[in-house]
Amino acid sequence: MAELSLRKLSQMDIDLLEANFQSLHGAGASQWFGFWDTNKLRRRIAEDQLIGSADGALAISLGEQMIGKADWFTSTAWGRANTSACWEIAIGLFPEYRGKSLGTQAQRQLVDYLFTHYPRHRIQATTAAENTAEQRCLEKLGFTREGVIRQAQWRDGGWHDQIIYSVLRDEWAG
Image (cartoon, rainbow, N blue to C red):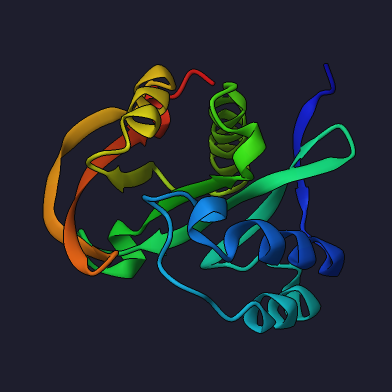
């Protein structure tokens, strides 16, 4: 089997993201928030290759084939940004690559990347309460389930609970 890796996104990758994530089937029930403006992604790639000081995104590749996207962004929910900011991560795999442990591998590589290249102490992830596959993935990676964020996400015409997980730098074994 081809090796899974993370790499910078390119302008051509945006076409694949549009084709795979601009529908309920493509995004998946817990990640479908409606249509979104991919021109913003195209501008960001031209501006800073989607690698910024407050957020970023990488392509998930299996060999030479892009199979999804991994994102991180600054979360400051726990205090002042200059003292309490942490990364929040998110991942999306194209439908035919889900359920094969590729998301676990990609998130492991993303956490390794972030802890290696940025001095943040905490990485967190939230997932839909009904997304048990992602919950198992985060637990397998060593994230700690911290609790439920009640009715925090608007999706599919209603409010949905989120489960929050985190891992600290000194807990991460990679």
